[in-house]
Amino acid sequence: MSARMVLLGPPGAGKGTQAARICGRLSIPAISTGDIFRANVAGATELGRRAQQYMDRGEYVPDSVTNAMVRSRLAADDAARGFLLDGYPRTEGQVHELDAILAASGLALDIVLEITADSEAVVARLLTRASEQNRADDTESVIRHRLEVYAEQTAPLAALYRDRGLLVQVDGIGAVDEVTERIMTALVPRLSARGVTA
Image 1 (cartoon, rainbow, N blue to C red):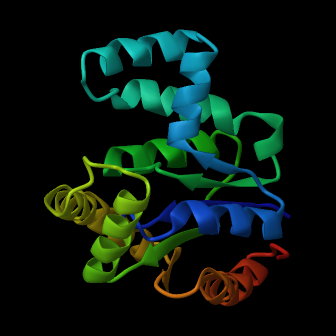
Image 2: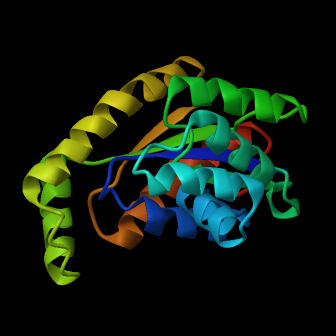
């Protein structure tokens, strides 16, 4: 059986690191919207060219383009056994679009994992990262704003998925291995109950 998952979590919660580990354990691809965008732009696909026009003007890429890119990526062979989506959906409209994409193939999500993190711990983590990687733009005010935007946009999605019985929340603060084990301990019973082996 496959595992079809969505990963939620604020900036600095360690989503990228944990996504790679989860996908290694479950043998499914980690699919981030950032990677999808870069692949389409680099490959000069029709969708990539459309997205580039918006990005060149400093505008958000509209849902219609993002949804089409996600639909195309989920149709790839490596996603047939499942996937972990990171960075999508970001809005309630995208939640319903993802439902429709999966329903067209007779599928549905198995789990929505939200990696939670205390805001002050995340700010400290991101400020350290900014210092180590010379990211002058990652100031405390910018980081706090990104966390506020995430909270505003994602809280409704987490509530929606909680109402569907799909949401699993795991604390993302701690050593990387410790967080991975925390996540797998939370996921395995839920996946097993849905007939997915982990």
